[in-house]
Length: 274
Image: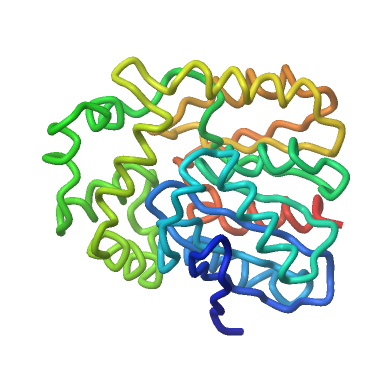
């Protein structure tokens, strides 16, 4: 299993394909992250399912794309990636920004989506991490988001309740992502497209609510109770809007349940992704 690059809309996009014999699953990371954040799932479920993880445009080792600054634009790139891989029907699993983007994918081509898993999804309500609100401000965001050891430490503190959940592989990916030329500027552009000093943009999360009310595929919502980036109340609201959805609230878990509670998260995926 190795990483591969494809060209989409003129941008090089990195992905990893487990090649498993089971159903295809597209796994999408959060803001400022990369496909390594799913390695605990690849290690466990990769042989039995065709797991496909990717770096969204401007993340990890993928190029930036002017067409992919919105959730809808990112979803379009994701569908084009799946088209290149010959995947017609897919299960979607996303964390944070990746979950919000997966929701747009389900809205764009519902007939191709077998099921949807939203883990600590962004864009479900206004409330968001206080530092993200401050980073939305000109100049202050640039001061707060300088590449270096402090940026690595701040990201780890934000995304997990227990720092030991960050494996050496994920820590190395975070350090690489933070140092990547242009990464800080892209992070702020992406953040500001969705967030203001008041919180996540109303037009973004209200669109998420509209999509949730119209979903017909099996939808599962997971949220760590101790998430400091996005409150669990957002997922509770989403569950109430989405007919027939399932909500799992994980205790002693922060923003990235696939890293913090991989055994529990993988067991849920094993049950859901049939």
